Length: 305
Image (tube, rainbow, N blue to C red; front, side, top):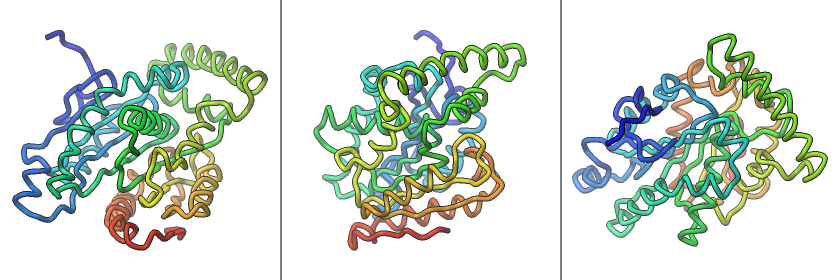
C-alpha cells in the first residue's frame, strides 16, 4: 500500500480513512462496552470537525481528552484546509465525505441493539462548522435522514463574513516559515479579496460559505432541533467576533433550540480549552448529560455559564 503522510501520523491511535478523514477505534469498542456494562452513557460515536489548517499537535489535545473521557468510543476526525473551505464547492466537499457517511451508517445497527446513546459532534471555527454542515447535508441526500447527533459543541463559530478577520484566519493556517507565510498571506488575501468582491458585488452578501453555514446550522432538515447545543466563545477572539457567535446562539434559543452559551475572557481563537481546561471540559460533559433531559422536555437552556 502506498504510504501517505497524513494529519493522523502525529495523533495517537488514528488512521486515515480518506483524505482529511481519520478514525480512532479503541481496543474496547463501544458496542462491546455497552453489552458488558449496560450503561449506554458514552457516545456511540464522536465526530470532531477541526478548524482550518489545524496542527495535529493541537488537535491531539482534544482527541486525547475525548479518549480519556470516553475510552470505549470511536472518534472520527474531519480536517479542513484553506483550499477546502474557500475553493471547493459543496458538491465536491460532500463527495469527499462519502467514507465518513459510510462509517456513520455502519454504526446505526447499534440502535437496533438498544446500545446507541447517540453521537456527539464538536466543531471548531468556520472550517469545522462548514464541514459539519456539508456532512449533514450529504448524509441527508444519501439516507433521507437527519445526521443522528445528540449533542453539538460550537467552539468559536459561527461568525459573519468579515474580510480582515478572514485574512487573519488564513494567516493562522499558513506555515511558520516567514517567507512562506508572507507569500501565502499576500496570495491568500488577494484571492480572498477577489472572492469577496464576487460574492458581495455579483452573487450577493448572503450567498457565501460562512453565511450559508450559519443558516444550515439552524435547519431542522439536517440537525435535530431537540439536541442540546453549546456555544463556546471568547471576547478576546481576534478571528471570529464574539458578537457573531452570540447572535447565532440567541437566534437558536429564540427558535426553541436547547442552547447553552459559555463565554470566556482572555482566551484566543479555539484556545478556551487551553486557558480554562476544567471549565471547558466540565461544560462538554454537562451538555452531553443534558441530552436525556432535553429529549423529555424539549425546552431551552439559554443561560450563560
